[in-house]
Length: 485
Image 1 (cartoon, rainbow, N blue to C red):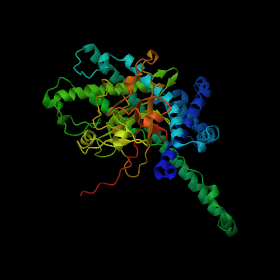
Image 2: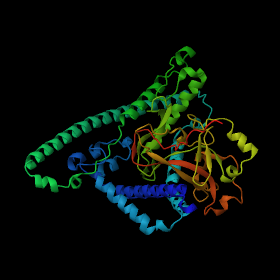
Image 3: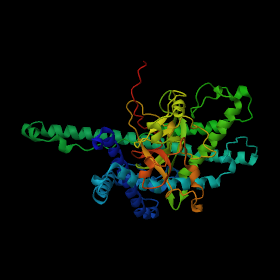
Image 4: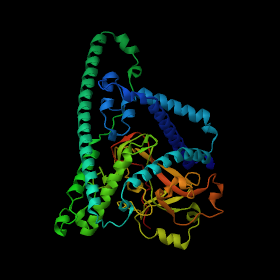
């Protein structure tokens, strides 16, 4: 039965979890609005950690948090009970109001796309607002910038970002020290209670026999990953850009054969290429900062992504969340050419030759059979015709042993309803779609069953949990290696 095949069931599970995550995130954002009056609380209010134990977020004073921390209000004010209650509300909305049990996978895809459309428009409009604040060269592949005033602007922005990162790093290190102290105090408290309980009941065999230990066990609060590795990498990466001299000789500019905090080895490249790379790294770093802090219609994304050296040894580059992305947020897009399903089911000689060009596969297959080919997508130069600064999903690594993925793939359809290229109101948001068709979908192919007019099929990554200042990982679902005949 095709409706109960493992692949169909797996997709259904992922569709449900994606819908649940996005619905839960919307409820959390509604809660933020209801708590907006908290910003007028007195400056000497006690820290949230002193007021309520077992919080998911930081214990810092809400009024002392810098804007660049991203989603600070939610991090501080949200208790574990809040999270569980909103998950329950989101589940009720899906199961009762949407009647998910009665919907097919195709209908669930449509419901998910409706939720994704609004978020993607917000992200794209944020990109547009940031681009409007930057000089034209920031969206130009020509890196030979001669304008000294513009070069001074980039350096001033980098210096400001460096100061902010240093402050955030100091805060993160202080947080870790406080957390370690609290953990030790809690451990001592638990041990004291255990000793006291043992001495009280040592002669009470009957009490021990009837005691149900499971009733006393509390659910542990998940430990938030450390922010220090990312902030340290980001600080050193910016320091690399500030120390770089574009007029240095070849001998000076190619002194190191070790990958820097961008994962880039300068000695492997021509000095002109290194200058180009450093220029684009500067643009990408500052775009990420502006996107993270950009306000769009009173909505603050609170996060962006940057490419730095991976925390996995010898893995090259990785992609990091800069800020806080809530569970259910889109965090990256897969760039590259899109192959419609019909050209894969009946491959032609030309398509076979194309895929046999090299074994450096970077292909992503959607559940509907459409394939995204990211093999030729850029890793560093993210400007030009398709200038989506989050088109870096193909650089995200598979989690190392012992690490769980913090994001998952999700199908994205850029529809006419979402991105009408003829609408001046959207002001060319189409340029942020990071894909092109390798072959145009057939008029009488699977597209005839689509409920919306799809201008481009895409693929993205969605946060599985709250992700804050850390590297992104998603499950590659690697197939076993093919045996050589």
